Image (cartoon, rainbow, N blue to C red; front, side, top):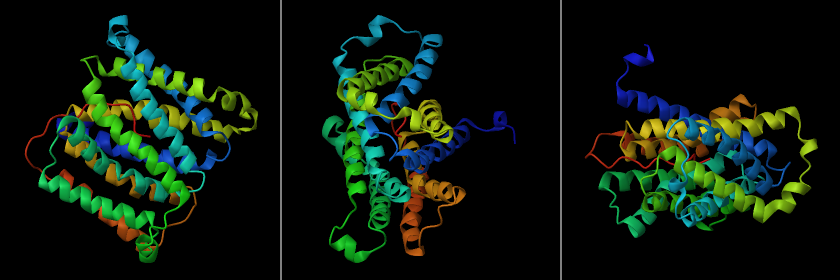
Length: 310
């Protein structure tokens, strides 16, 4: 069926399916270069590329006006949170398997719900709360490698712990984005956040950026850098923006729970094998959470478009 023949909500769902697949790719591909380059340096280059693309789109679209960048401290706060998330993501991928890291990512909606209540007094519906609990349980099962003894002992890997701290920053970013926005066009606002990210990353890690052995990166490594910059950052932002205009926020958030399943698919394609059966039980719980969040319920406020999560 041609895309033009689909309803607007169906187009939104297709956009989020592609979004979740591309985000998942950043875990599998990112793990291949995580130990080859400093996380700060890699994140800085990633967002120089992605920010350039978003900046061009903003200039061609709504236009870049100085008035849109008033109160620059807002961009600094949001840029610091998002920079921390991406740096800690690649730092975690140095030791954590991509599937486990993706499972940690599915805890972000639970954290966002908590910060949303603290900052915006947003109330989660009973069905959403149950879905978040089911998805969180599945994520923990994967994170602890389907080992009940490890779960009871809270024996979590260092990489997962590092990335979880990054997910806390990401979860705080989401409600703050809504609170600090002053009606700027989404493209312009996100360009401002990306510029702040790059400035902060360069200011903090300029020594690491200069010391990085860029010449040692192979052609395949640079293709991965371009993937996480263009597809897992710039394109996913556009897809998220497209979907949030057609779907309620609960349904947009639901696709977070597809990430571990997509990562398993990427890992199979890359020849990295299939997780054990017990681990797949946790992945099944995250899919159940997706199904629960996709079911129709009371209308909710549209999501605030943001830059990519990964």
